Image (cartoon, helix red, strand yellow):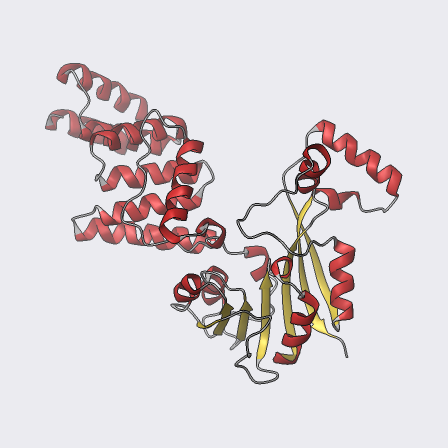
Length: 371
């Protein structure tokens, strides 16, 4: 694109005249009888500034089909992903921008964006230098699926399930930001919860247990992680060592969750806090495949061995000597009108007074040991 058009368009963008900038851009395209990469960047930048996510998505992908190493277009595509509500792929696009960036100043900007996305959304982004290019004819959902397949082939398991921190669970930790907490997460995965926790409590000492060697190696960058199975390994900790013990979505994958709770209870200080999250087996999206298709829904390759309702998980905690400080219901997706009607009929039959449990995806518990 000629310099005269670039200067004219840039001037209108600075003044906030986005309609005028788009008109000039179209005129430039007509004059040169084609779309070049600079024009696509400008067009995408305008759509980014105006918040037009669909046109931004289309324009950035079109530009990347012409130049798949353009860092600015990768960042703009990542902005579209973030607007679509998928920070994981936004972060991965930003990572791709970093790997294709030659200029130090630009690289610093993309690095800061990567850090922002990780901290804002509680993510740990894998260090990837390439992945499937979202070509113009491929829609967003298909690209998301392709990226998931790429990650699975790269790491041998579905790493996406280990990339998000449970921000609601971390938010229940008691204490001020400068408190010197000693924390253990059992089943710490890639360490995203511990990374998030490090941002909240800068003076915390972080420990983890993880049986997947690849994930344990990743989480070892932020915590002292022991690789092993908590059900049969020798626990390398002294009694009353920890202010906080975390079990995020761990209990369903244990053969004997009660025995594990009894094993780790002595590691907690007398005034310590046990944080547990458990998926709700009574959640409507879990029930519907079972009722209608005779199959149990599973989002992971590793099948659950235990399933819990609220009553069951509360009973388990009481048997194992823990008292509930707080129980938070994490609401899932809204059911359709037909499903909502069925829920109402079930509740009318059961008369449990807990109709909201059908729309609760996960229970989050803050517990302390009984006196």
